[in-house]
Image (cartoon, rainbow, N blue to C red; front, side):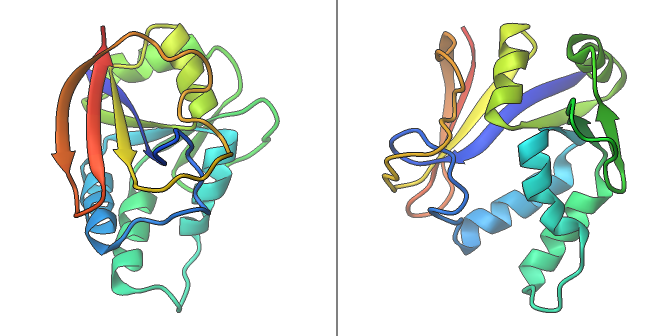
Length: 176
């Protein structure tokens, strides 16, 4: 049975702004290994469109960026959208009945499925389907952007805290 895990980089003031700060080398290495271990990713439209960057090769990428792209491309992706009509390689479009599809993925797949996108995570939280929350807390205050929790924070129980590098802490919670 799969576990649905919502995790994103977050500023100290609770925003998931991918342009305000970027992971350093140790954190990026962590995400390469994390991507390699995933059973797949379940994306909201906006997050999927951001991550599509990794579908195309770039001669400007570092070796680490190339490793991440290969790990990301190799895993299955499910994209939840009512507006997209197609998705890229190794991706499946989900345009209706999110609850049934998420339950099917959990039942048929073994391992961790990353949930990416605050609004998608809110929908899955409201359905009681998120098994774990991973907040990668960065020492930045951005003052605006998209909040990690798209609605009221659900009741959570702290599971662990892991120092990823000198500045980034991974906080893991499960529903209370």
